[in-house]
Length: 364
Ligand code: NAD
Image 1 (spheres, rainbow, N blue to C red):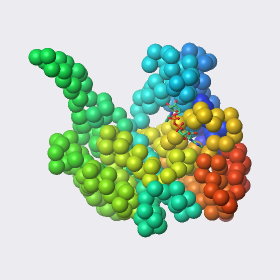
Image 2 (image 1 turned 120 degrees about the vertical axis):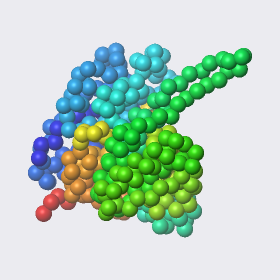
Image 3 (image 1 turned 90 degrees about the vertical axis):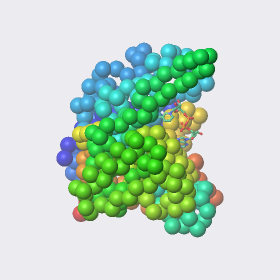
Image 4 (image 1 turned 90 degrees about the horizontal axis):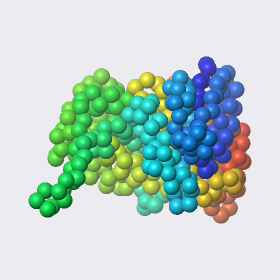
């Protein structure tokens, strides 16, 4: 299979971690007989330096013409980088918002997985972390409160601010379909999270998710109120598989889910549109404090590449192989600096990439 991938290395540690993900992809493609066609484009700070803008038409065109986009993080030190002296629409983050919009990415996926050997980093009680967890927060990304009409007015000398939360049934249906499809590739359970005891938009959300679930009898559906979900994530995260929710609830719950894994350098993410095209990137930022030192943890980006194989190319065996390689390398005691603990064997960023690539088994 030919894999057409746009590559955005990004800023800070971006180039270092993306190079390691490409190393693992090359190795996997070679062993499974796939051909990688990579096109590198710029975004964020690197694009500002080259073209004076964080996003160019060329980047949009190359990404649109690809099957998937693999990205490192973008942005610099917000206190010292000259990029942050520019107008907001010319700063690195504007490029990220722009590319998400241009590609119509409406579904954001953030897995939270606890590796047994890293359980000590989990801030939850031992009896909870001992059960492990493997969940995925699926957040609607282009609607709801963050995109509704807003205004601030003064009425009779009193300042008043208004934000509006709107969803139509099509916006809900398309992400619900995605959630059920993805649950089919996992543990076949969807927990739809809303605030249906208070909000009309949540009542519509729940009704449409119920309608969609009728087409997926093999997937268990449950509904949960968002306040309860926030509690359950710290009380019993093992109960979850796919957690489907709207934009603002997802924003908050996905950060909570990241926190309970305890290791930011390990968390992958994907943003999908209604075709197979997706943008895959680590959940963390560009870590300018450690850029260029070859000490960053490349695992989040390597796992993002595995998600890319699974969701944009339906190459589940290859994705499993990469995820198993990561698990084996951790089980063998190899760590980058950020997750190092006494008695373990420390590797550089490139050392970790090489080690994981060396553990890809290939098809037989
Ligand atoms: P950050 O995630 O870059 O860093 C927070 C801390 O975690 C730092 O100490 C950093 O060294 C460490 N860290 C992060 N990733 C790591 C890795 N892979 N290996 C080892 N250590 C790692 O967050 P920040 O410092 O708040 O932001 C830095 C820049 O990144 C800012 O410009 C911000 O806007 C940008 N950012 C970009 C994205 C994105 O591209 N999607 C997301 C978040 C932040």
